[in-house]
Length: 195
Image (cartoon, rainbow, N blue to C red; front, side):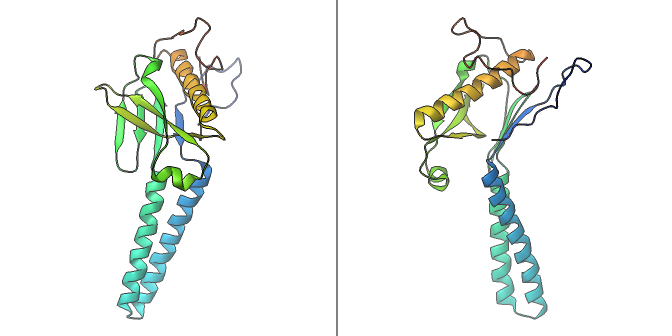
């Protein structure tokens, strides 16, 4: 998970609004850039083979390069941005622009299942979801947490969502909720930048 944060703020400078950005893990991004580099190298090799008139080899090389470039792009694309306009989440194939939900309870934590879980390993992982305007549940890409146990992963994700909600409330983007009369659920700071 990556967060874009403002620099150190002092008394002379007013807080500057910085959106919160969540992306794939650093390991996934390194793999994606590696696939992109291999794809570009494959294109160069395919063009060099074409100069020698070996069209079958060129086609095979270009097909493999295109596959590497596509996989790199699809791995780099997913992210979620929280800003003044709402929540923008990009999946490998779709983009979702959502208004800020009316309540913190519209966010939820779901178990990560399927293909992604097998790639990431045996440790349980969870992903954040949000209920959109029409009641549809949208998966927030880049909002994945792994831990030794699923309850721990859920706890960490809830903490992250609480901090994002507190940050949004501090900027007046959402109503300030107090579900247990002791502050926000996480009780932590207000995120990367706040007034």
